[in-house]
Length: 320
Image 1: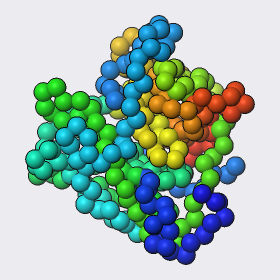
Image 2: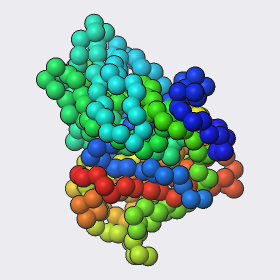
Image 3: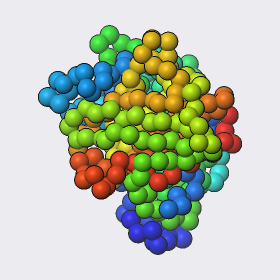
Image 4: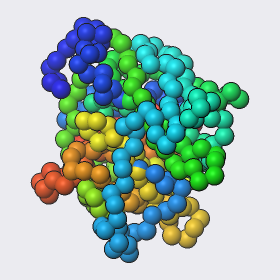
């Protein structure tokens, strides 16, 4: 997309851009980059360190999630396909089984029955949400998307059914209003968010498991008292630029298992399904608040491409 492209109303650009729309507004969870930048699933069990799992490279590359609205006999029924940018609205959806019935029983993963991710097509706006489920299986949460454009909604869940597997289903969401897309931020190894600096070490590799280690600091000092968030000292979501494919990212260890410490390093294992640019969103909790740091990384690129993105942003107006 051209940064300079302006369209007075999003409706005029919908036909050209909405096919890959991506995003979520958040009422109670981390928020990233509501303004333009200045310059992956078996979540529940820790993945082995890449150095100790030589067999990873020989494994089949895990498929990217979120590209389909239906998979494995389940469908994401988004009842709110359009909102108005800058206005609070109730986002509602239902997960339906192969018979069209609403799913009302889920396995808890990372302390929640369902994780909802909403991100803009340009990957500048990001939300990690935890909606409320009604008895009839309808999920809902208030959202307020700051910018017009195409978004993608991701529902990450596991049905409470024998032999059921984790699924990430995706659906398009449109936010109407004056539309101006942004370029994908360039890659660097540091991100700043609300007075915190996060450094990224490691590389995302296509078809091969690799370790991504993120170090959290504040005022030049390592943060060694991170608090658990969603069953770990950090939660990482990776999205592929272009089609917004959702990667399964594995936290290495859990609080209290003797293998992890509350900072400053938070470790994950990830496998990119293909070469290309990806946006990483790290949620971490400190002093009772969840912050989000964002990075752009290049999988399968040269060392000059760099592993990370310029700046992460977070909006502290939400509660936890």
